[in-house]
Length: 301
Image (cartoon, rainbow, N blue to C red; front, side, top):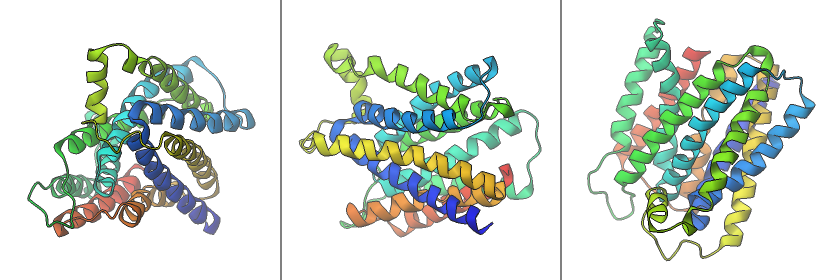
C-alpha cells in the first residue's frame, strides 16, 4: 500500500506539472500546435507501454477508443486553451471537478442510484464552480476569471469526462489498447487543424476562439514553447504509466483519490511562477472543488 500511495502521488504531481507546462506551451505556440506536440510525445510513451503490456486488440477496443478520442481531443484543446488564457490556478480545479461529475451524471442517467456522499460531492461541485467563477472586481494583486476561461473549462471538463465514460466501455482485457487508439484519433484530428492558419480568414477566426485575442507576448519564444510541449507530453505519458503501476499495487479507491489531487501541483506552480492570486471566495471554491473531486473518486471506486 505504501508503494501504491507513493506511485499515485507521483502520478498526480506528473499530471499537474504536465498541465502547467501544457498551458505555458499553449501561450507561446497557440493551442493547436502545443496540443499536437503534447499528444505526439504522450502517444509515443503510450505506444511503448502497449508493446510492453498484454492488452488485447478487438473491434470493441478500437470503437470505444475512437469515440473516446473524439471527446478527448475536444477536451484537451479547450483544456489547454483555458489554461493558456488563465488563470490556471482556477481553471484547473474547475475542469477536474467537472471531469469527475460527468461519469456520475451518466451513471444516474443509466438508472444507477447514488450514495448520499455522491450527492454531497455533486452539491460541492456546483458550489465550487459558482465560487471559482465569481465575477466581482478583485483587488489589484488578485486575478479575474475571464468568461472565455469559464466557457472553455466547462467544455473541457464535460468532454474529458465523456472520454472517460467511453473508455470505461472498453473490454477489460483491452488494457491500454483503447487508450492508444484514443491518442491516435487525436493526432489524426490535429493534423488538418495545423494547416488551418494558412487556409483563410474564416479558419483563423475559428482558431481564435481557442487562442483568444492576439497578444504581443504570444509567439515570442517558440523554441521554449516546443520544449515545454515536449516536456508536457512526456510527463503526461509518464503520469499514465505511474497510474497503472499504482493501480496494480494498491486499492482503486486510494489511488483514484490521490491522483485526483493533481490540480494542487498546477495551482502551486501557477502561484509560484506566474504570481497568480485569488479572492478568498475563489480560494474556498478551489478547496470545495478538490473536496468534491476526492468524494467523487471514492464514489466511483
